[in-house]
Length: 130
Length: 130
Image (cartoon, rainbow over all chains, first blue to last red; front, top):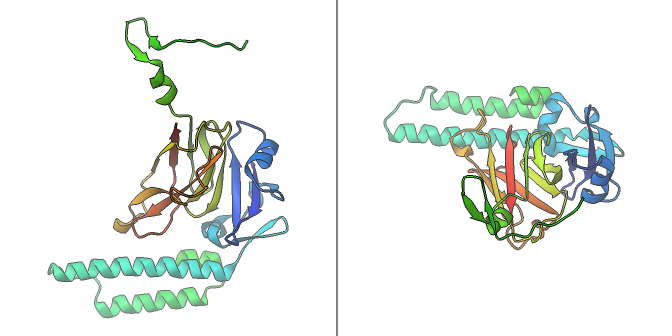
């Protein structure tokens, strides 16, 4: 178990400061983090699927929680970015005269289904699985 | 016991020599190797801590302040398996050259992808020369 220093940042998220061990964590807190920062065990931070949505973390008192609506928005943005990337590949294949493995209709259907799954998800584990 | 050696040239037993300036200005004044997704430190020199501000966005905090904020930053990240063709990573100073994010006590860096999204990589390596 290691200790880290946390504080709410200007983006509405949480900044986590990890000491290297060159100086004491108390010195790091005074030197590298703003007033009001808190030393916590890293085991108290969101774990597992929750840890994958760092930009959705929020600080409430001394507890870090995951804002699930933010997590869904992050997942949707990732999903859409990947969809654009895949669509570009498909377009290049078409221009090069290469058949796409999945038909346009099935590709579009998979995007619709993925977005529906994100919208209906109730846990970060479900989001990660999409 | 504290002391000072004054010399213009360094020379080894085989007669190979270099100007002292090469040792003073040509060596890294701080460096760190850490895990992007957690900030966990693998090894460091003259770095007191790493602050994760968001996905792929970090402050490297120096144990002892650098001599000037006009230092050079070099960085590299691991090419993780999840990165696609549009995800080629590159390093950026998040605030630009006129920002106060590059000071003698801290430097904020971002690991951006070709498609402009930030990402955490398994290993992030940064060094600073001044």
